[in-house]
Length: 318
Image (tube, rainbow, N blue to C red; front, side, top):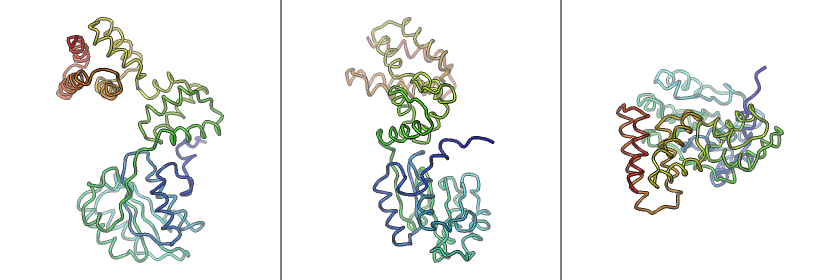
């Protein structure tokens, strides 16, 4: 039997269990207490609790009568995104009356911003015609990809990235339950590579624990394909001192050990520049160089040559 992934195993079942998003959860609880709700749009970055909040909301409203494909329907709109799916599966479910004693059925359309324009136009009529027995929750990363007629029919909730302490608290809880030794540096590394995405952090925790039950920062960075921030800053500072060969030796070691693509390395360097204690004008010049190299890579330039050219340009700034 395949072991259940951490992400599903520790998914909150009720709104009280949702990590972060306090203001949104408080508003959703009002819908639960009133036993009614409008059509909803949940928008925001990945891994911030949109799908979890939708399922928890449905579970709190329908309680023990919640039955998949009878009282609620969950679809991934990036797979089922055509007009035929809206006209058949979604419409048929929306107009069917259920015998369960529930206030209304719910349709959850995940990644709704991937739906075609024709499918969204068909959906707007279904939302109007069957509101009395069915509500819809549209989940997306970018709400501007949803057509305005649908937006006007929905209440939009915008999810933000989770705070550092919220992610750390959840990871510590999972590590305690799973009897995993999570070191302070390992925890910091998990937060760093997650970039506010709790789902990604939990997945990296599970992957790291399969290698060693003690989570160290080196394991996390290798699993995530990221380089330690200290190593990135060290390489940049050495290059700024004009030591090309020494900086190149660090670059060769990092690319060989972590197997990063040049564009991933540039992205991480770009993030670290803002945290470094160097002059503002120097930061501007470095960012401009990074942009030039990234453009060349997008046009098909050789990665090794461009990375070495990057170091050479940084050395010339001296």
